[in-house]
Length: 179
Image (cartoon, rainbow, N blue to C red; front, side, top):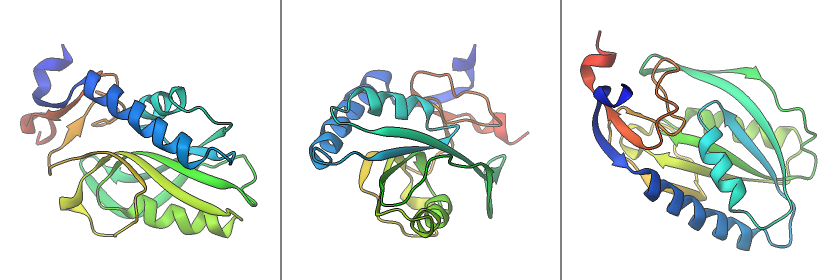
C-alpha cells in the first residue's frame, strides 16, 4: 500500500543493513577503549540506531532526545526540544545518532548544548547526509550515505509521521506532499 507513494528506491534494506554493519565496526574500533553514550535524535533515528547498536562490540549506554525543526517538508529554522536527555553528560564521550542531516540546523544547535552540559566529546553518526540543502556546516564523523536533494522517506524517515516503517529509503512522489 505505501509502495504506491514511492517514486524510486534509493537505498535498499540490504544496502542499509550492510552500511550499518560497516559503521558499527568502525565505531567499535574507534571506541574500543571508551564507553560512549549513544544519544538518538527521535523519532527518525530509531531503525538506524537499532542497527548501529546491534553492530557495536563495545560497552555503551543509550539515551534519546526528541527535537523538532520541521513543518511538513520545510525547516522552520528553529529547534524545539520536545523530550530531553535524562542521563548526565558530564565527562561523557557522546555519539549523536541522526536519521538525516540536511540543513544542519539540528546538529548545529545540539552539539553546543551537549558540550554546555558537560560532554567531553561529541561525534555525529547519520544515516543520510543531504549536502545540497546544507545551510549550517557540521563535521559529521560517521555517514551512512550521501543523498541527492530528494524528499526521502522510509527506514525512520517520515512525511507527517507516515512512511517510517518502510524497510528501505525511497523518494516520495511529489503529488503526495504538494497537496
